[in-house]
Amino acid sequence: MELNPLELFTKILDATNINAFIIKSDGSNLEMIDNRFRIKLYENYSYGDIFSLLNSQASKDAIFHHTDEFLLNYSFLCLPDTYISEGNTLWMSVGPFSEGRQSPEDIYQIMMQNGIPEKLFREISSFYDATPVVDSVVSYQHMVSALASGLFGRDYHPEYFPSDCVLFHNGSNTFKTVRDDPQIARASIAQRYAVENELMAAIAAGDYEKAHSLHGKFITYHIRPRTANPLRNKQHFAIILNTLCRKAAESGGVHPLYIDELSTHFALQINEISSIGAVTALVGEMIHKYCLLVKNYGMKGYSPVIKEIISYIDFHYTEDLHLDTLAKMFNLSKTYLSNLFRKETGATLTDFIHQVRMRKAITLVNSSDLPITSIAAACGYNDINYFIRIFKRTYGLSPKQYQKFFSRAAH
Picture 1: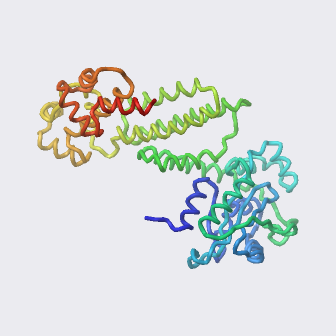
Picture 2 (picture 1 turned 90 degrees about the vertical axis):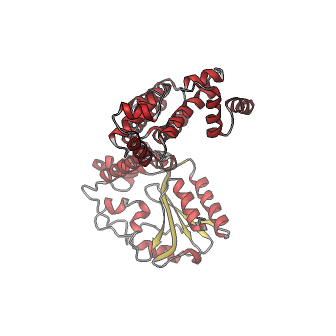
Picture 3 (picture 1 turned 30 degrees about the vertical axis):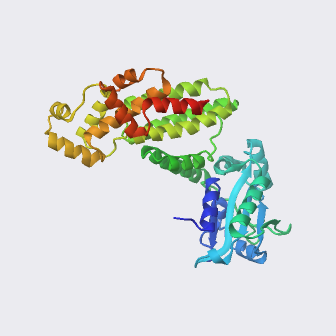
């Protein structure tokens, strides 16, 4: 289904992992503008004044940018009437986001300037840790303006609120009473764990697109470094992610042998890596490979006997496997096994055996110089012509054509 400009605009902003939403006419979602920071921090706080400020500055071609007293950044876009549904205002809120991570010293300074007691340092730090970071606030704001102009056909231009305007005014800055126990840290940690659980569920389902998106959101939750070495901290995060992925793959029904093989592979790479950029690339590969592992080897939802049979095929694919032998081995009738296997996996037993063997074959064709006859034998095919026919049916090329094609492509 084709997305309209507003849906596309929102989807692109979501990909940056920065909160973006249309403000409702009744103000019921105003507290999401700063991710509920002030309503948790202050007693009896109300966001109502934001309405009057935005409406007083309404301009069809303006995107207002604002940096608050906590050095958090926001953008407010006035949307075309065409895309506004009942119950919504014209305003879209984007934020908060910051430029670079605040150091502990910076956070203390911000707290002192805003009259926040030192005892709340952990609470305030947790909010900064959960706030998305951009490389350049100005560049991000320009990106939002250019994107809105292109999608909505308006010449949007950046504007800033007048110097005497305070976005989060609430009548007066002096009467705000800080809560003794704002529980900001608890909320931030709960959000991070919720995203973490969603990420694991996506990997357990083999859904790479969703897992990739959730990983982008997960890394915006800053984990305070354990050492002064940035590379070591990145490696530590990668180790944590490898463990999460391993547990997710297990939940997805992958046999422990395959999980251990992939987990060990990444553990060795993490230990040997020598640059922060390489860790970032490896983490992306990790998400992809674990999702592929689940798609190729996941057995979640299968009955115990089908799981046993699939595991047996995976580990004995070089042997002479047939419906007769497997039915006898697992004490089942041929008809029952055939029907049950197809019902649960969506494939015939014979086709499934070919799928397993072809995955092994393509790996050997890509990574070795073995003769085709040797590859066929290593995958359980004694008849070379039969092997070639199945390979071509699966990949569209014969093994030799495949080798030649990708050898040229590599050069």
